[in-house]
Amino acid sequence: MTADAFAEEVRSCLPVIAAPIRANEPVPSWLSRAARTAGISVARARAYWYRQVERPRVDEYFAIISAADLSQRRLEDMESAYEADRERFARDFPRLARLLPPSLRAPAPSSGDVEGAAR
Image: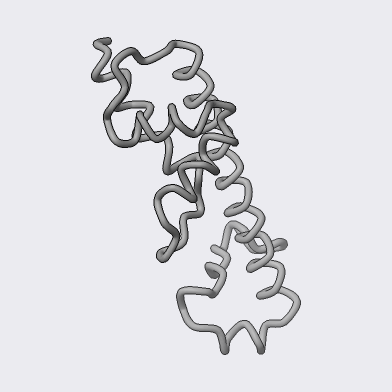
C-alpha cells in the first residue's frame, strides 16, 4: 500500500469515528472528537483530513482503523437495540403502533416467526 492510499484510508475513517456528525457542526469540532476517540493528536487528524500528511504513521493507522471498527460495531448494536424496541412496542401496543408512520413501524412478522403457526 502506498503512503497516499494509506493516508486516504485513514481520512475516510475519520467521519465514521466521529459519528454522529450534526448538520451544523463545524469540521474542527468533529475532527477533534475523532482524534480523541482514536487516541491521536488533533493536529495529526487535521493533517490527515486536509491531506497534508507527509509521512503516515503505522501506529496512527491501526489506532484509527480499530476505532472506526469499534464505532461501526457500536452503531450496529444501537440499530439492533432500536429495532428490538420497535418490535417490542408493536407487540405491546398494537393500536398505537398502527398510528406510526410506515418508516417507524416494525416489520410485520412472517408466518414462520409467529409462535404456533401451522407449518
